Image 1: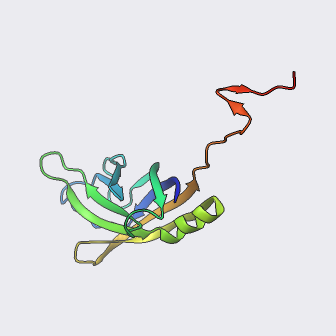
Image 2 (image 1 turned 90 degrees about the vertical axis):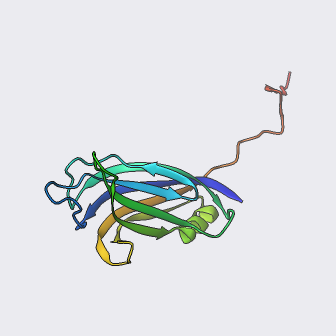
Length: 154
């Protein structure tokens, strides 16, 4: 099993469906991967084309338990006096990226656009994300190292 870190670069979204009638949306993103969750900053009055430019790190095991290698990005509109509105979501399948990174030490998906869809799977904009997976190297051990002391020639 390979253990490593998946770094997600959340760039921006474009053409999102406006959920507020009288003001611009205050969008943020919930990033979810296998029980781990991260939350982006809220872009106050970010509207339909918010820019985050933030990085998030997830601990990854490959192959891990289950076969669901997907990163979910849920876009929500922060509301003060009511529950936050669901804007849409994107799913990125990262199994191939993890397999390549496990074999080569690292792998990268350059920032690209993914479709954002509503609950009924209708298109409602796009989100731009880049992903890097880096394998965690094993701790260096030296066979001549005993309790912090090394054998010497003296």
